[in-house]
Length: 443
Image (cartoon, helix red, strand yellow):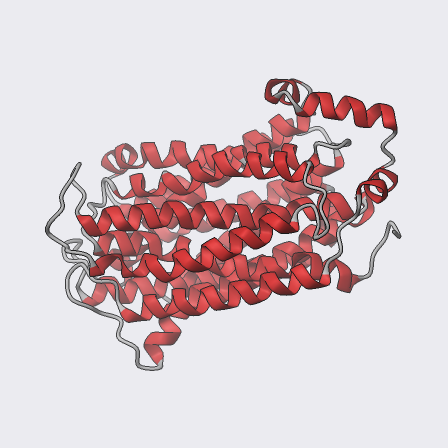
């Protein structure tokens, strides 16, 4: 296999990520809306966001560990990709129908039957998305040379943001063509349901495309491509058997990039959790009481629009990142991206016009583009051996753990700052702290 591949081959490796990201975008933009519609209180809303990163933290290291050893006729990572996509499609058809369960009965631990069904559906959805998502990052690590990894992850970032753009706009698009955007109390609007149905169809088609067009390396080709000797391979297998041994021998970049990741992903957890309520109150005059109000549901659609603007900002910034990295280096590109996004979050405090919010979320998109590309470029360039997938799976804990911590602390911080809008400013401060932490990274 040639070390440097054509743009089309790099594109094919990541194209399925477009469909997976549509599912992830629908989840991130609509989960707070769904659970608020089902009756969740704003002060407990962040607790519903604990399950997605928790499942990711459990699942992705396992996908990495076992896919490292899965050498079969259809590939090394692709079997996990296909299984995850199939499960995700099934759950995407179920989750938006949670409100069809009895809304006022079946209470347990303060949750009604609809919320329990939605919670378990969310758990399976995020598990399956994580199973389907991780193989794309691993295939880049497996099959792309160090010289092309920056480009490969930028392509992945581009496709990720393009998929996000589509997923975010689905609810307002279906409302525009006449599908109902309101429903009886406790029932998810049809505009959201159809968004999940069509997103599921696109997801499976995109994954099938990557599955058909990409041929993974066999074990011998893999060793030759990565320059692994028999001695190194043997050592890698011994390390692979021990979770603690892998962590002990992890390169320093694993931990320093992980610290930056902590601030970044905690910030975005608050964006996903509180944007709906924040925008509803600041730009749509929502009184913060009835989620069945048109103002709240219209704001829910607008969240998709501003998240789409964020995706456009990410697309533009992702296209510029390779040049910025070449000129200033990965670290400076990373830090500048986080500062821009932090200022975008803080600016939402002063904006009451829904269209001016486009500027804020476009700036936030710069951070998102960097988060999807630069950390993985830095990390995979520091890894060598047969445990690439396992390390990338473990690295996912630096994405999931901060979201869990942020979700657990969200209600308490909300009590301190007072409003959901102020939570977006908290997210901005977290990104600025992340930018300062970049100085600790040694490539």
